Image 1: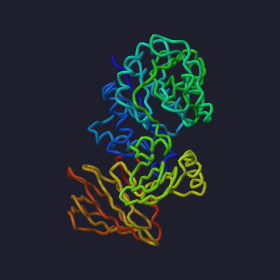
Image 2: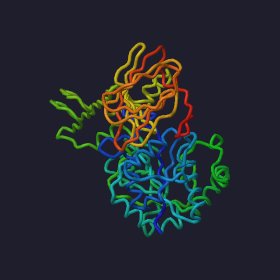
Image 3: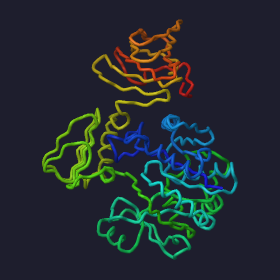
Image 4: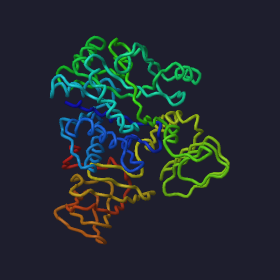
Length: 450
């Protein structure tokens, strides 16, 4: 029987701001067609079959998971979508997934995939070949380094096995000189991909993290009481039953803009991205929808979004996290939302705003509807641009087509729905003394938010 797949999809990706934000992190960004999460699900399905894929994510991102799977033609069952009430790093997330697999299947083998990595399809067969090793070891997969890299953890192989080797040591992210030594001595990059049997995993968890093992004996534990700890630090570095198998497929964790730039085709001067380069070297530009000219730059990263611009030296892309922390410290929502905000029913994009008004483009997916709600401090004018809107407004039910509109006074209960099989596009003009997203009183909501 093929292994079950467990996808970890709860991260935030602060080092990729302004592309990655709290409510729409990097694993869900559709940079080149499918998102990294969708590509991970595709690979996991090829390995396990879609009905044997589980996803651990946060309550915040559950509808991104559901919506992106629906785009691919899949629906995930409630039992296979595990919603962490708060992030606790990788070991509690993996333990919860392993507990759910054990509950469903008993003794089983599970492949654990991060949701935000690039991985070549050739890795699927390499993972399959490693399955017998999971009967004796906690199996991790290492990437043969292509160059010294200070942004990755490393694994030192020890005693050779029929496939791979026992792990002699895990090493944290090194400085440049140490990374060069690691590459010469045959160390592997730590990929964050694992192959685990439920039996060995929980025996080792009992031995090295007994409190955590007890927490998952009875199903869903009290998450607030769990330690925030990685599987590397909390289990693998302590266990003597860990093996590493090399993966030779292309891989990147896309952990910062240096990695993003490396993943793009480059010209002879090392430039990449959407720009015209003159006398420039090693410069990366991402600015969708704009004509960008770059002259005389060296070692630069430029990332443009509708509401934020990042300019950074390529050697300092790791400091983007520090920049995000500055914005967060002063309560700036620029780290949380894009101008396009995704919701369970679709999305909205802020087109313009100023004192007393805000203009949005609202997209309602086929067959979806917003909550039945009212606003205490703002009124709204809706103009249908495309599709058909079914509107519950006070004591009336309206059906509007393209170029038709209606007005929603403050304090009036209302609901917008799309009864058709094509997207509904509405321009929403808000007016009032307060236009914050928290001025919503939900009276009924099929997504459990009321």
